[in-house]
Image (cartoon, rainbow, N blue to C red; front, top):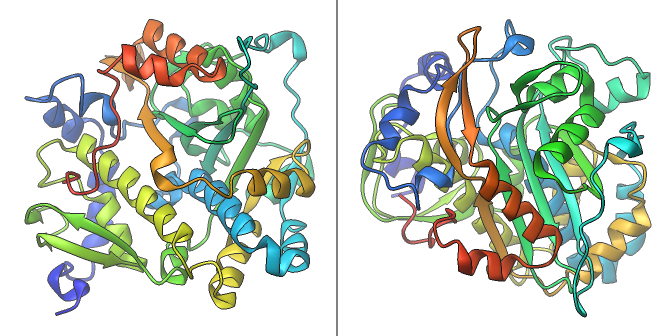
Length: 407
């Protein structure tokens, strides 16, 4: 029996119902809090809240692949370049030339000072990664940035992650910032953090995240994606382990205990499931991060990157849809990729900023309140190359569970 047979879909037509329910607010998140200790699942992720002022009247979005595409794209691109550069350097350089560029307009006076690194440690490299939808007018991010005309509300980002590569290039830390985190946005008062991108594009998003985290972003990468689920198919599927039978009553989808090799629509189904999981949205975030981890594991496995078809399909799909700041040259991408050639899945730590509570704005929108002191300490440790000590001192910071424990 195939994996697809063991995880049977609902009838056609249920997808529209799913999207309405999936975008319907905090009901599932609040259920997820019941009986979940703050030191684990609560810090592991959050769900989707009603749209902020700048986000209403927008088309519904897709699932995990749209919301986490920037992280996947950049890490996968680096892995592909590092794995294939020896044999197909000229080809990869041509592909990299297709990446769009934009100029950051964040005033230097508005940026945090660099965090000092003590002792013999080398400063690391910090990326702000964001996933953005195509505009409701059909325009892509690269197209809009090239035009120089950013119209508030046309594009929005549902995913923001800070990725820090250690100075010795031996560790990568990926910290998710929930889209509904309530923060000051320059020129717009307080709002959900993802509203910054909608209001002012990558530069305002960068400025907002830098002010919130207290650290500088060395580079920014944004991707809009058409058919990102095809990447899992290009890789021949991604294998995950489900520790117990799970039935999703909302999607009418049955998952059976055991290994599943997921690609295409089935991969989407895995990462968007939250109903039927004890932790609700928090377990869904664990699934999403688990899928990313196993995809990276597949990428560094022997043979994945030596297949010319896989390499062509994967790199081409990413570079056509990726936009980075113009300080990140093709040469810099290649050099960074080579410096990370020995990185493996176990060298990547996935975290989510700690959330203390839910809140409601005067306009009635649901938001998330971050644990600001701990969040600030986390990012300071990230930039100062002190994450191992920080994690040792803060065992309550939620991290991704082992592959055989993700529900």
